[in-house]
Length: 179
Image (cartoon, rainbow, N blue to C red; front, top):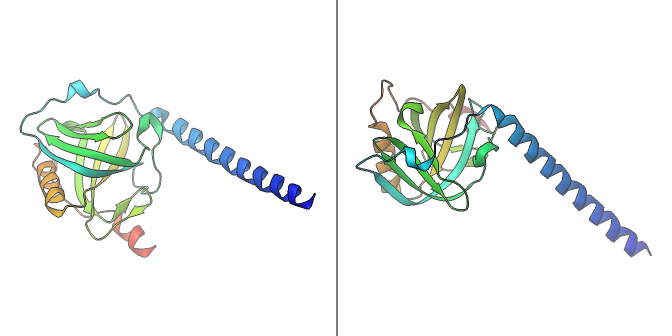
C-alpha cells in the first residue's frame, strides 16, 4: 500500500511540473503578442547569398534581456538551422518550424558574443543580430561551430547596406561573464 502511495505522489508531482511548464510557455507566447507578423519567405529574395548549412538557432530575446526568450510566432524554438545572408537580409531556415527572415532594414547591429537565451559558448562563439520589428527591439542568436562559416556570415551581415556602424561591443558580455 505504501508503494502505491509513493507512486501516486511521484506521478502527481510530475503532472504538476508538466502543467506548470505548459502554463509558463503559454504565458511567454502571450507576452509576445505585441510583435507584428514576421515577413513571409517570398518577401526576401536577394542576390549573392552567403550560406552556412550547419548552424544552431539559439532563439530570440527581447531588448537587453539575454534570458527573456520570445516564444511568440515560433521564435522560441531552438534547434538546427541553415543560415543565408543576401542583400535583402538574413534568412534562418530552422528545422521543424517556419523560416525566420529578418529584412536588412530591421537589422540595427551585429556582434560576436558568448551566448544568448540561456546558452553560453566560448568567446565570440555566437553571432548576435539586433533588430527591431514593429516597435519591439529583439536579438537573435546563431551558433555556427565552423569558424570560417561564422566569419563568412558575420562579414556578410556587417557588409549589408545600412546607416549603422556595426560590430560594437556586446552588451551581453558582462552579465554572462559574471555568472
